[in-house]
Image (cartoon, rainbow, N blue to C red; front, side):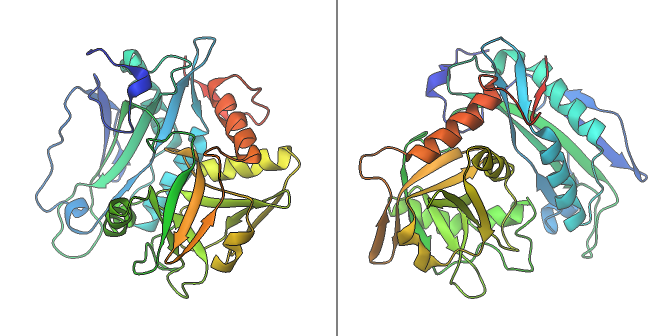
Length: 337
């Protein structure tokens, strides 16, 4: 293994020792196989290449102060992957195969799991793809489930510091009755042009509005949006938003802290009234929002370059639970070893 400076890691790919694979043929899943190759053989007519039969997940593994390796709410990632698979007519991956694959990848790549206190984590990427050949638009009859891991740093280079984002009005991420609630590659492909545009404009992420009316907040780049005001945690409710496991966890933690929670449509006109705003997801955890720019308008939420007090408390509670520093009162953490 090459020497890794854990504190300097970005959110990117680093080669590790092994990954695991499991094939679906003749209507059933096979055994988990271990591979040291970073490549997969694939048919030129595979449905994942032509018709987007592909779904993925992302979850993190952490080393605690006690030296134990933990992962966070993997069952929720499994449920979401099942939902995504059903949405594009792929077979469901059984929970026991999913969990065994997670454990095996961690065990086989233990030297790449960052130490406690470095701010880095080990990111697991489960993936299901249609490998059976089809020329007509129909589901494949063969599939591959694979899972690899890589050490990562913060998704946004700023880490837990406020970022500036820009509202996008000339691009839609997902339609209300489309694929927005599924974690499939097409949703992310749909965001590439707008994401590149806002990055070139100097912003960390794009904030999308609903595709139907362009009146309500949708997703914030690759993350869910939340706003805080009047001791209330407010997050958009929409049929085109990917349900974030991090957001779901923050809602529970907010309630634990005595905040009210509202999951509802959030009109753009409400943005000036928020005391704090943030983007949340597995990769970003919480990324506080310093300002939101909408054309000539700018809404500022951080004037001193720091996150707001409630965002800080939520972040510390969540990360503390993941690392084992805070009591896991909701039984969200699973010990891998």
